[in-house]
Amino acid sequence: MTGPEVRLLEERRDRIVGDLRAIDGQIAVEELDEATGAELRRRSEVALADTLAALEKARAERPRGRSPQRIAIGLAAFTVAATAAVIGLAGAVNSSPTTTGGGIDLANVTNEELEEVVAANPDVVPMRLALARRYVEAGEFSAALPHYLYILESGPEPEALMYLGWMTHLSGDPATGESLLERSLELQPGNVLAQWFLANVRYFGLGDTAGAIPLLEAVIASHNTPADIVAEAERMIAEAES
Image (tube, rainbow, N blue to C red):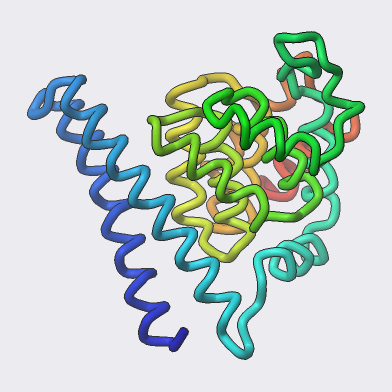
């Protein structure tokens, strides 16, 4: 795909993000009722997810393009401690069930087996989220993305929005990543992992250290946060305030 085509997709992405913010503003001043606003937001989020998927494919097809995985590696080289802390926190605070409703221990199920189960039961969201989460934590964004898009077609889902926002940031678009993470936290306030993701997006992706500090403070205050991540958050705050 050519550079101009990629730019058109980027412009479409930016318009949709603007639409989402406008919808929130209209709801806030009661120009839209909650039900109408929720439906408009759902449609915009699906359109945004489709656009992000097209952008990922387009960038991967460009001769000198960098895949999201390579961009993630580059970001990790720039901020190794923060990226490592993200992985650690994901494991520490993940409260999703490790078994299915039938008592199957997901730890003993391979990705391939779980893909078959999800294909046979496409609307069992917890299993689809568990599979997508595995891919994200392994850096296999292209494998995770279709699962998040499928989930979001049915409406906003906080974990899907959270990981989609983080992947979007790592793919080189922190502004859209921030918007998706903010929406995730609107749906699930106090989610420590989403707070940590958003803090990193603002701090490293957008250079908004002031906006990151309250989130870092919330991460530090949480009883679910491991000691090494608390230390990293404290270091980031100290650096921002120096």
